[in-house]
Image 1 (cartoon, one colour):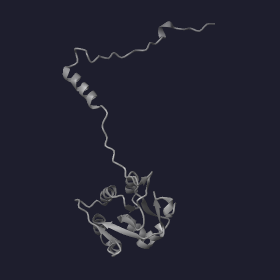
Image 2 (cartoon, helix red, strand yellow):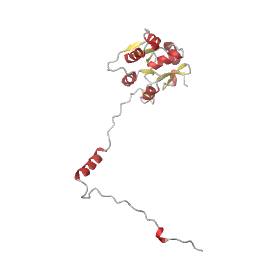
Image 3 (cartoon, one colour):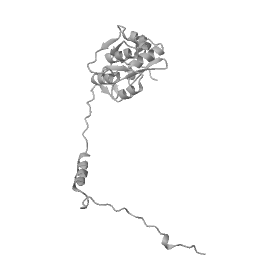
Image 4 (cartoon, helix red, strand yellow):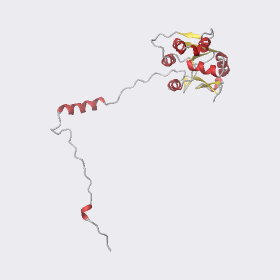
Length: 198
């Protein structure tokens, strides 16, 4: 009638035995290393870059016509694929005069790509495109563009590169132009300038 309960089956929680740091079996060098780690892991001091006074939230109030647009390699290639004339399409997007700028790194990238991209190279050598000389070593255009935009907040960056756009979004006050649905679109630009939204 009653259930058979065996009293010997009761399990007890077993605790692990830990040696304290003050135990004489632990070597002094190990004890000192652990204390040093505690000291080093204190609060780290971070340097926060100063924000320009012309920024209103994420919009740069200093930008105004004529706009200065730094053009990236893949933006030129996407414009050719979508049959868009670069200077005219920029003016249609921003409703104002635009000056496309090309850095030496972007030009070097286009030259490295070879004969397949000779049309892009011919477009870039148009006199309407202004050249920006680079003083650094190497020809990685993304780093060059990011550095230039961080120094001077007067540029709009035209690129279709997802990684570069992700990096540029972290910099406040830098509008990004890209090709979408066979036309140019711009983000992080105040509505007052009349830029189309997607």
